[in-house]
Each structure stands twice: as structure tokens, then as C-alpha cells.
Image: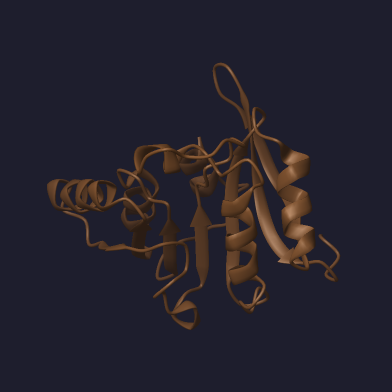
Length: 179
């Protein structure tokens, strides 16, 4: 769903030559699609198994992709990026395992508070930050976490898959009026 929107005419492309971080890359589907579209992609995941899988998928598909294990933006040089795409864990439950961290953001939205605290220090006018969320998540809780760190979420698009709606959001400083 995210890939279709990112590559669509209404999405944030074109991608040719853009330097992109796919944060929370999982198996690398988004990273691989953007690399195929011409982006220079750095893919990261907190789960070492996911990072290994993404690197394997890049090699298998003959695509250039740098993959790292990282917790959020820790160790990532943001000044070298034009765009960050995030597939966050958005269900408000505490993760009990590394695999759970792909789905659960913590009962108090701890993932989002940590993410937005880091993004508040990023020059968001220069580095576009985009994320996907599902209609099944607590949108108000995520927006409150963004607001607590001086940020807002701008709706850039929405699409329905077979069973659910997904929203594509851009992270902006709170004082910037969305277009």
C-alpha cells in the first residue's frame, strides 16, 4: 500500500537520485521499490533478522541498498538524507519480543515519543519525513505524541486496501501550516 502511494502520480516522487532512509524496513519492500525507482536508499531496522532479510532481498533482486541495524535515528546522519519513509509500529500495546516491535508502539506510545523527540531536531523543511498508519491505530494518540514534541502530522493521501484504510502522513513542525 505504501509503495503504491509513494510511486504514484499523487505521491511524493520523483525518486531518481533522492537520498532516502527507509526506517523500520522489515523485509525491505519499500526500500527495494524506491531503489528500483532510482533512489539511493539506506534501509534500517531495529531487528537484526529483518536487516539481514532486507539485505538478502536486495542482493537477490540485484538492487543497490545499504542496510543497517539501528534504533530509530540513532547513528543515522540525517543531513545526508532528502527523505525518510517510516512504517511504524502503531498498535498501543507493549512489545514483548523483538518481533513484536514491528507492530506495537507501547501502551503510552513510547515509540512515537522517542521518534518525534528525534525528528524535532531534524530540519524538516529540507528532509521530508513520511509515514503510513492504519485506520486500526489510535490516530489521536499518535497526533498527541507529535504535538508534545512540537510537531504535526499532515495528511498527504489515503487509500483503501482490501480490508482497511491507510493514511500517508508528513511530519512537519507545528508552526508550519500544511498545504
